[in-house]
Length: 79
Image (cartoon, rainbow, N blue to C red):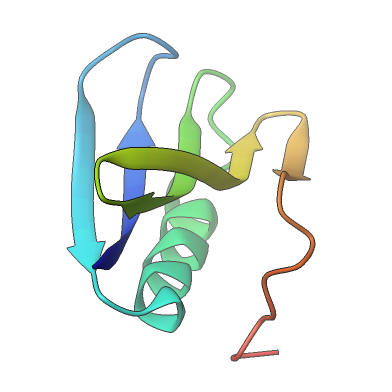
């Protein structure tokens, strides 16, 4: 089973606020909401992570430098 996590950290190695959903679209909405609320903070790190059978793969990361996508094959269902 695949789970999509949205994580928010106010420091790169600090504790994270995490939400988990079975679908990418829900995690993406939360990720975008957090970017809008906290993305201008220079120390914030926001991620979408796909987890399947214990293996994790970071799909998107937002920092003060902007967004990095690590999996361009994921389609954006909300675009």
